[in-house]
Amino acid sequence: MPQSLINARDLYSIRLIATDMDGTLTQDGKFTSALLQAMEKLATAGIKVLIVTGRSAGWVSGINSLMPIAGAIAENGGLFYSSHNSESITLTEIPDLANHRQQLEAIFAQLQHHFPHLKESSDNLFRLTDWTFDVSSLTLSQIQYMSNICQQQGWGFTYSNVQCHIKPQKQDKSVGLLKVLQKYYPDYSLDQIATVGDSPNDETLFDSRYFPISIGVANVNHYLNQLKYQPKYITTASEGQGFIELSQYILQS
Image 1 (cartoon, rainbow, N blue to C red):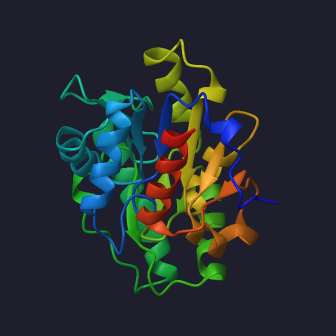
Image 2 (image 1 turned 30 degrees about the vertical axis):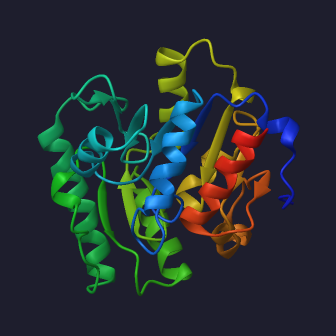
């Protein structure tokens, strides 16, 4: 079971925080001035922040260029944007992008046949590797049914507090993050990485085989019974306030 009291010894050597965005950095859907101040303090202390989000390539490109971060991984491990390079780096190999998008649209149409009320997400136009639709109004049993359909058709599926994602089967946050760490941060050991999240599409970031120091902000409690992998620690505060709480622990340690 996750622990509510974070052990300062675990945080002493942290050099990089890999964090989800929606529901983890945001507060009621927005970035706050307190969050940006916390990120500035982390940067000043030499602690890098990588955003690892399910949001689209288009959105993440802009966020990466505006925030005090080292980079951002978009589309649940599909692409990487470094703060030193405006061009995206593909983490999931897709030989024919146009055909890939057509296939994603076709499987979404299959889901709509079963659930006509499904709505394509507003940022789906700006995506490359996955296809998203709104999670609101869906029950857990409906989400599981759609996941089964996607898996039977050879696709991966995950969801967050914002969206459902149809994606390549082997594309997820941990795979993408491990690729980025290996290539761009080879001198960082995994016990120097803190991973942070709040929902099922962050589950692989909680896998202790790869990420021994994982933290859920308090709103992850809503999903614990749905997670195979659970965070080692859970903050007292929810959403962006939980991330700020964690950043204070790390800076104090």
